[in-house]
Image (cartoon, rainbow, N blue to C red; front, side, top):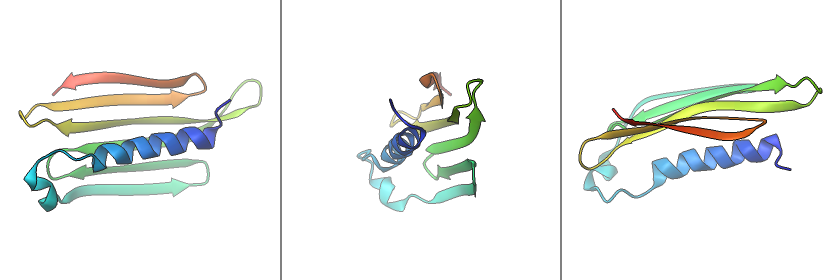
Length: 108
């Protein structure tokens, strides 16, 4: 069974891999962080950033106690990027005791 820590690590690595993935654009060397926010507490976190090329990542999490007494971490977030053709693609997601649930918001 996958524990809460594993889910957090996997989702965090996934979010960072999106940001770090090569895009083939020369402008990547000139990217700037437009906004960034990091808030961490004992049982929750909330962080986000947006880059000058339109890429964005947001994620927040909190601990939830189930009826049977188990504690799980619920994570909500989204990531988006602007394709070379100028179209912005966004995926929102949540992860809870029932797994990972992505929703493609699509073109914006």
